Image (cartoon, rainbow, N blue to C red; front, side, top):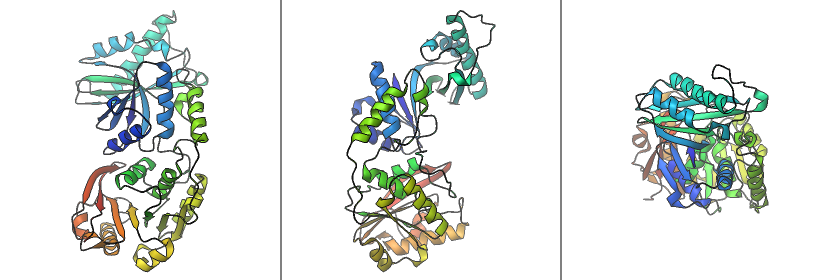
Length: 399
């Protein structure tokens, strides 16, 4: 069996690095567009443990899916027949609700609703027969007996049939029930921290001067504390008999038993925003995550910041500035968004190069970002913030 971690486009490498850090061999990891595959072998106990570990520990993946089968689907007959041959009774008990979702790309079977209906019909056909029921009978679906989310992906006439083990997306850590305007997804924030080489040991201070609901700072605190991102939430596979609560309980117990790092006497993670309401929400989110002592919050207008204010506030002589500033498609009109990029460059760059003591990393959809910043970024990485194609611009080479 393979475990499939779906990702935002551009984040696949971060997920693969996390899997290696969890102890999985690099030869068992395959990186593809929008997903990372982990081969866990055929031992059911190892599969269950890996499903629990990846759900609880991965900070950059969107979902964890368990792959049940892969086969060619040149036409609808092949799709139905091969799906109906699978041992669905191993994964679905009588009465369970069967939900089917998926996508099709570059394939003859491009009608997703038709594929959904046919896959469910084939699954029901198999279950009716192995339960000695007539093909004309209706599969009884009782929400009280549980539900299973079947996920399919058809690419180049090849289908992958999977089960969603996460339920809610992994970006829903449980600390941000209050939604601020245009929040950055937690998984994207975690990936940005990795790509920008955030130093979780405190040897460099992190400042997000456009913190919004505080996601970047809170994800940094999660990394610095060593806490598992999914420790405070539940997962769909816990109520699925094939996986169950036991492996999740074991992984949680092991994670809770690990000694967490204590917050430093003086924080090395900071967030500020022009909106007092945003800062209050960010502080509340950090408290809900149990990370309030890791982060320093203040209300600051970006246009009022300068070296002296930053130095007196953070007490640091070495800083990573990492932010997701508002832009035209989010909260500002295009001119305001351009002005904010110019302000960031004036504060933290010198003629388009990093200015000591700062490194600057900004995610933005602005194609003219480097022109506005006054220089070419030292590194660029294509990422997606929701459906918006962006670039993470990094400036780290000093003049």
